[in-house]
Image (cartoon, rainbow, N blue to C red; front, side, top):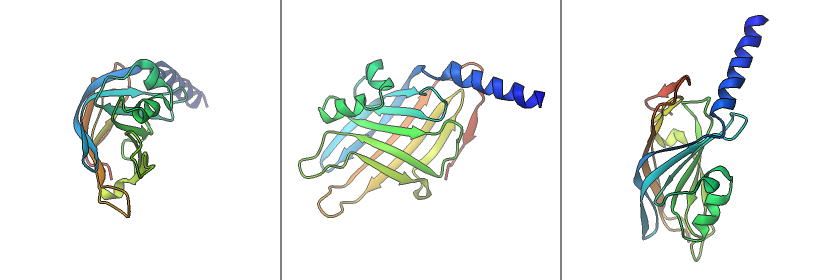
Length: 175
């Protein structure tokens, strides 16, 4: 019982220490829809309080902290055409997810309302993923044109330097 309590307290302390911190990293890649393509070169990671989510942004423009920590602020910037990229919603406790939600940060297309996609990693979306003190990954998704929607997709590599005293979980080919 005492060991369980110590483990619970240590886990809560770890989550509370890393939650709320914005980490800047490195990125390269692109996001596209139809004939529009944007080079991605900025990466940010943010873990909201609670430790159940990790938001990873990979963008073509720098994001202010206020847009990173607000659940919808980056979406508003994208709708206004001020930033382009992807936002990944991850579970920091699972380095081998079977599903991934990726929100495409793009302005609304004239004949489409597509802004987000939910993708199954059974299609091999993550080529690499490491979550823990070091966060890094390689993600790819392409979708052919369907009905009136243009083809869309992204390919991105992102990495964040190791953070002190956080345990790492690693998957070389998260499927």
